[in-house]
Image (cartoon, rainbow, N blue to C red):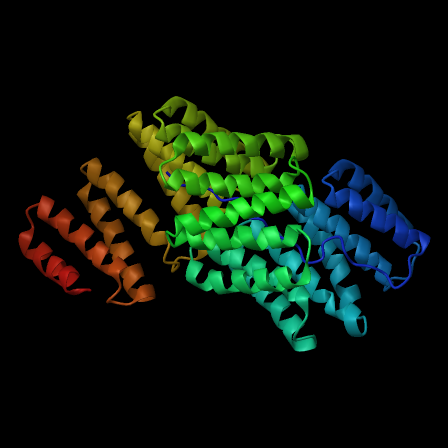
Length: 431
């Protein structure tokens, strides 16, 4: 079963672009920012739209236009209205790029925000390029700028989603150090970096460290906002994932249910983060033997993500694969095969065909076909996994050794010992 992780993504200075002087328009925008930070999104949208209408009377390159476009875009991003968010960010970007000095630096914020809309829709390669551009812009213009923490954190999130935790961990630690140095009181940014760091540790199997990061992030969010703030659900979701991996399924289920209740109240039952949590809840329920109930959760997760335009995201693929596993347990073989292949197509498109994490999907399909006695298909996917791991990880990687053993054992099961023997010898030689 695959668990989705609802990682917190901050848009740098989402609602914190302050003016040199607080004129009436700036005061109106600041009030909208406070309402948005409090999680009162419907009210915030109305206030931002009023500010945007007022800004239309300003000059085309007036900085105030860029501020409200960016902040309304950030709100729409939180509400999963990704296309609308990107369009607003792109209206803000050229205005900031024309500004002198520190205001031009804010273009890096907008680049970061556009990258997040790409990430949310599964356009990982575009997102990584945009995050790195945002980081480079800040490093060139202001090397010690603490605002660089946001794109650092978000790039770490993306690398974590791509199962590149060793690359992500130092970025998350750098973002955490910057934010801890900047904020004396409990702050949501510190919680976000702890959340990201906790996920990099989880993917490396360091579960006790990961659990402590998520527990600390939850407490900070409760102190900085409120126990019912939508971002508290982020920490609860990731804590549930760590509990699940430690075999504490009932605790994980309870944690996921608490997170779902918060998300549904704050963002509505059709928000994609609810879909991600339903997938996770399904894994905890399935681990306790409640197969039909798990299948219902996976289906609802897929429906929500499809409606939000997130069916190209790897988290959508997780729900699809989990439902395939339920179908297989229910002996619905054709349905399971169709779902496995759909999930693989999503992953290949989102990650690129040479991303090493696809090896796991190939192994799943190979195991599925082997159990059905379809040896030719099983062999094909095991070879794809082996070729991918050799190319990306190198011929001496332990992952290559595991692929060699899987392929060799398949040949042994078919009494093709002469083909299996060199593969198994090579696997044994890798240390």
